[in-house]
Each structure stands twice: as structure tokens, then as C-alpha cells.
Length: 193
Image (cartoon, rainbow, N blue to C red):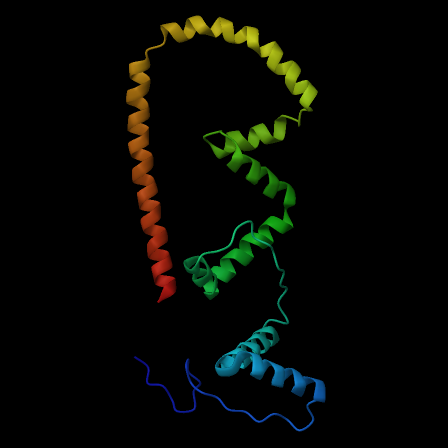
């Protein structure tokens, strides 16, 4: 391990500073109110302000946006976001989405569709225009007689072969999902070190 220098700033280290003599009175009053409000946590609150200021200064040259999330993040998700690698990855993903919004919307539509392959889902998104609700009702009414013709085909279908095929696919998907979870877990574990 690396031996820390005495001049290096470390986590948990106390830092003292002198309030400059040219600080305006309204800021001094605000600090006094904060000290009365926070009491024993005053130094922690001041440290938050200092770190926010230093962080804002270091990222002024970078473009930053705030995006509301649909749900609150849990502690592990917030911890994951604090890592530079996570921040870089999310920034890259967001930049790609913003640089090509049409592709982003088609990708989102493909993720929300029931198609099994992404190429098929993207094909469906590109080639079928959006349908108004009245047209959709007409299409469903027109499709109902066709379903009656398919009833006989369903009677002749061998359901046991379908169950065997689906159980095999389910096992393969679970194995693949477990391996993806292992990879993601290893990746996150490495980032947390």
C-alpha cells in the first residue's frame, strides 16, 4: 500500500480555515444562522458546502444536466453513481441518446415491445406507422374472424412439444441471466474497491 504523506488531505481529516475579513455581513449572518440551526453538525454542513464548491469548480468546463428520476434511488444505487466509471458510462449513454433521438426512441420502443430479437423490433418500429385508436378498433374487428379460422389449427397443435421447448429455453435464459448477473456483480465489486 501507498504510505500517505503528511501534506496529503485524507478522508476524515479536520481542516481549519479563517473567514476572510472582506466577507459581506449577510454571509456572516447566514453562517451564524446555520451554526445555530446545525449545532454539532455545523462543521459537517460547512464541509458539504466546501466540497460542493470544489466539485462545481472542477466540472465547470464539463457540460452537466439534471434529470429527474421516476423513482428514488436506494443506497447501493447512490453509491454506484458516485464512482467516476459509473458517471462516465452514464454520461456516454446519455450523450448517445441525445445525439440521435430517433434511434433512442426506436431503441426504447424495441425494449418495450414483445419481439424477441432487437432487429425484428426495430423493423416493426420503422415500417409500421402509428395507428389512431379508431383505426386500431377497425383492425381488431377485422382480425376477429381470422382467429376463428385458427381455432382448428390450435386443436391440431401438439402442446407437449411446446412445453418441452419452453422449459429448455427457460433453463438457458436462467443460465444466461445468472452469468450476466455474475459479470455485473464482479464489475460493480471492482468499481467499489
